[in-house]
Amino acid sequence: MHVREELIGDLREIRYSVEVNGESVPGLLILPASEEGPLPLVFLQHPATSSKEDYFVRDVALRWAQRGWACGGIDAPLHGERANFDPMGLFRDRSRYPAIVDQFANELTAVIDALAGHYPVDPARMAYIGYSMGSMLGVPAVARDGRFRVAAFCLVGEGGMVGPASGADSDVPRLETVAVRIVGKLSDELIPREATDALYAALPGEKDISWLPGGHFEIGPDVIRAAEEWVVSHL
Image (cartoon, rainbow, N blue to C red; front, side, top):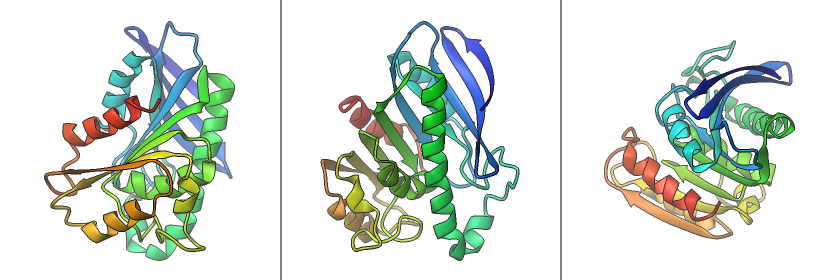
């Protein structure tokens, strides 16, 4: 694990990379400088063509860390500081979806293990917030890891990288122990409402759905607030 760190006021901002199956996974972690922990660990996962540096990851992590949480995210495959940077490459070839889903799930679990070995984070109190592609990758990754307590999957539905909402090939039934909020947009031009409704209906455990005005690309304070409220109530 390669690390560089700096103080920002009363917070520690940590830039790290974890080697997973021969590829370096760049990540960001922000946590209070003075608390010994163990602290809740909150992942914020960016949408397509974005990265861990965008406001809905880094800026939100800076604010939420003031709660006494350890917050941050990783650059998804083909995004951010990845060596094989090609954000739109994934969407030009849908046949790559299963491999990218598997890769991200393995990386998320490896990053959790690495962070737990180096920082005062509590893998028994973890949350995941995903936006669009961050949710598409997050549904299977959270289900497979099995340690998350709560998740907010924003702007997502069944199909594509999420896969089917039910059946033998679905990851969704493995979310039974995760309290899940789905955040949808009423005018989403990419995710049909019936796909979001199907995903929500299939969730096996505690769940909630919040419909907000606007389209798919309007990831603003309303989306962040809906995710925050859910996470606060469960961590």
